Image 1 (cartoon, rainbow, N blue to C red):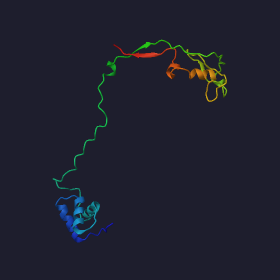
Image 2 (cartoon, one colour):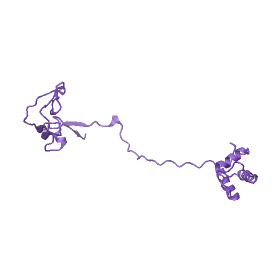
Image 3 (tube, one colour):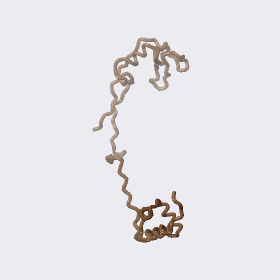
Image 4 (tube, rainbow, N blue to C red):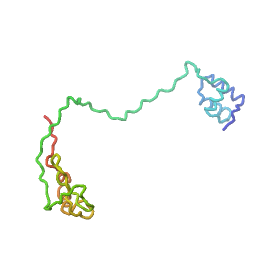
Length: 176
């Protein structure tokens, strides 16, 4: 870092360049080129302040900061849709109930509190409002939460959505 004691000829050059309207960055570059020094822009500003030259008063024709570029639009333009009140409500039709498979097993119908570690967690009931949910309760198959019969029932043929379909399924139909 260079000393804050500027040589007199460097200070005179600073004053001349400042009077000619140069920016402090260009003044530092010009002084460095002329005298083989390494003054920074901040050093030129500091020296001008100590000399009483720097201040808020700039010439009226001083160029302002360059205009800022507009930020690019990153979001895609959305289509305009009708307001919520003008949209038609979807119509739901009742679909045919899916016939569920069942297993030939007599569940123990244990409550959640009565289940022991190793008991089958296959649920029964709860279809009607207020109906209690009970669990199979037979010994679990190793590596699963279900007994062997319920394990095969849940992992049987068909896709998962077919296996888990309830008694009523709804299908969205486009309104005319």
